[in-house]
Image (cartoon, rainbow, N blue to C red):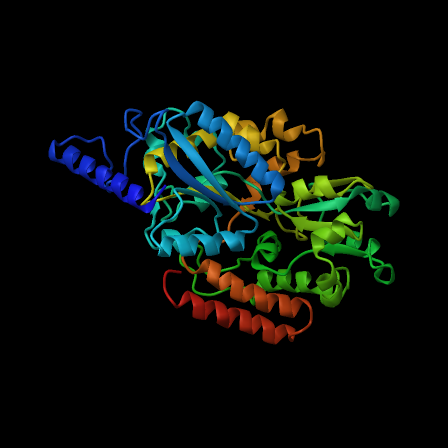
Length: 445
């Protein structure tokens, strides 16, 4: 859609809202957001309106999204979709920042819950709540609660429509576990079990290690929560990290010790030469911690051993916990919100979510699809896909505030230096805390 066409559509929408208000009708929302009345004009089959959808993903994921677009266009001949995929989420964020600054953002974009706050805080997103409330196609009750909560920027109104409910879990080499006589990761396994397995699977001289995990707030959070600690002082308005206190510090030390004391994770030079996922595919990692996003590449890359997925381990005397890795469809306030919502609405139907579930990439946010054979009984691994559904009650999220993404990038860099021994542990933890406090203090936290 050209910028001139965007502005024309925007002007028509504004004039329509003013006319409705003047006649004291109540068909529009108080903030001027367009409603979902099916008689609202978007285009015709002969002269369809075009919307742009921007998202990130690998080839298998993009193929799934293209199938989704094809099904939408077949059902909505008055709208065409220009799909704009990028390879990585960092590329997506750079693309979005540039397009919003230039006044030509995509009508719809898919983004992680930790990243959308920087746009929501600027008021450039159209809330999906009014559209969802008026929809006779989908309803809020059909979706899992954890991602809904994460995408309510103000804590009440749904800002973006959650597309999935992925979570951090443990991928493992089944053959390696069996050869070492280890029990497979199960619901009741503990940190002690996890460490023992990692030690049994490590042979540094042969270049094999027990566990691959990046040093980041997203990875440490489930350990902190399971041990009864917190990552921040206030979930809605954080001012500092609390990783230097009590149970949270115990969890942080357990995590750092995997590398610095026990040596069960690849050291710096090894990780630089071969990234975790590639190392797992090569059979040089016994366990690999990641979200559902690894499945397409693992399916494609692994052919000489059996692999599966298990839950995160629980702290001794603690409670099971994992972290949300959910994405959602957000709509630009200056885009064609009526046409954009029709695409989002279609994507969130059972048929729409089944298309992407078949790609292996997503854990559907619709509970009926997540509990269906389409997701739970795939022809390809992992065999234990139900793990992603069973852990839903234990899923928690980090804050999604305006400065969170910036803060996390800065803190994760320090965390990585500590994990690989480039920076003294105590100095690094202090630097993580002070850096977070300085960024939170910038405002919009």
